[in-house]
Image (cartoon, rainbow, N blue to C red; front, side, top):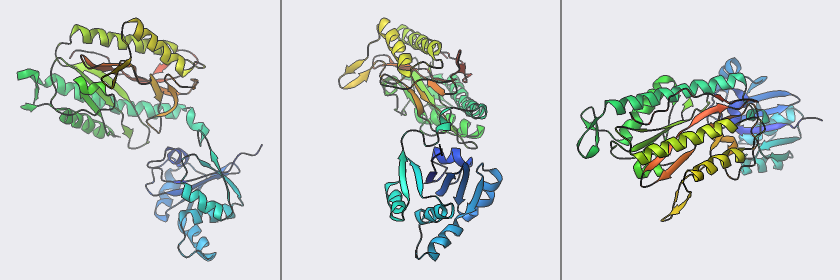
Length: 376
């Protein structure tokens, strides 16, 4: 059976499918076509030489060639869609399959010129789902960048003195979430990664898993640090979370931390080829309930364990498969996923631990090396 002709128009700086297809970051939108088992990229003329040298498509062609072809056919101000039509005509392609996220307006233009356009659900490039050994190395490399940032953050916390009202003092001034985030992100940048929206949240703020955190940091309270940088070189993401207390944790926080750590171990023990993501999540939920940690809502806000146990990781920070309550995903060897259970209660604060694992037919391979220590 003949494979579909794949067409996409986007940049590879932000679009993961295009980055996977061409292998290099290109900030301007370009055309990608895969037909008859061969791949073609049509780029801005200034990008052609770089893409030919470092890219991984079979042919790299200049955009000017196809814009000129469109003008020769009577289009006064040709667009990328017009260039794509010219490319398809040259390749004798009459029907194309585009990703689910393909722009509606561009698809309309293609159809106007007589191309049949089919939208593909799910993975546009199905091979992206299973990570190769080379991809696992790239993810491991960016995880190390995240760990460098985390180490610098913890070092700053250790150096901070406990001042009045339990405020942490670093280099003579109060240590804030914003300052600690800058320490972490600067270290990641120096290691070759780009970290944005790093989470440094404490107390009640840490009970919102996506709250970045703001204001002064205090001793003796749990602090959630969640770092998910992108490699500046490869485009792959890493993701790591740790919860620490500068000073002494309360007994309630210690129990909560130990419960989350045990929940993560339970997930590790279940992650295997052929296991449903929902099954992994349900096991963690059952354990938390058995320890007395209930999930629900208080005063309009969720408490307990109300997010998923994990998600896929690669050229996007959130990829297939998911491990949550409603997931229909089945884990397969070659998937790279996070394992990140958490418990969140306003009276104690949030606790989350996150590692990244490679799914295998046996025990998962933990790609995260950073230690887990509550009190520092």
